[in-house]
Image (cartoon, rainbow, N blue to C red):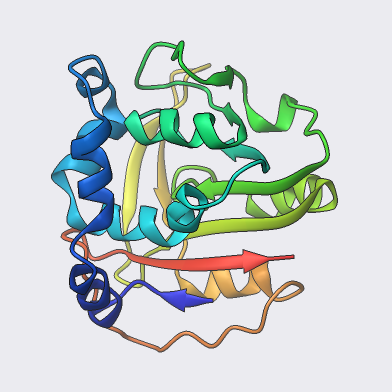
Length: 211
């Protein structure tokens, strides 16, 4: 478990920004219509996170991978060429991709098969606060799980509207205390306190690998 901080960003840049190089080699005009492609192209920090979650998979082959909330980009095509790769995604931003296998559904309604790797990149707990339920449901189905987890220690709050009613909610994003509590059964929390954020909105992202 580690934090994506200035040191990890520097080490990533020392590699020459490998995710950007892969994007430049693989992207087509069609890929640029997808939200995840634009996010990766525009954000060095998102590419840094992507590298630590997916980077070694571009050198491996033959794994059965379930990517929850992973979106779609040109790198998804590369992963699908090397692995049995399935995206489970509600597709809030884009149309369903045609080049990779995709289950358009909420992960809690998906029966996850036994697999080598489950990935959830920047989904929990900022977009989806059901982290404990996700771990309970998916960990028994996989040999390994990789998570990029977002939290805020600067009291981030969202004003949101229910999709099934007229109510307006104010939702406070998880901080490190709440995230630590959710993970205490699975990992020893050893992240530094009050580390400067490398993200423009002040968030923190940690990378976690779970057997």
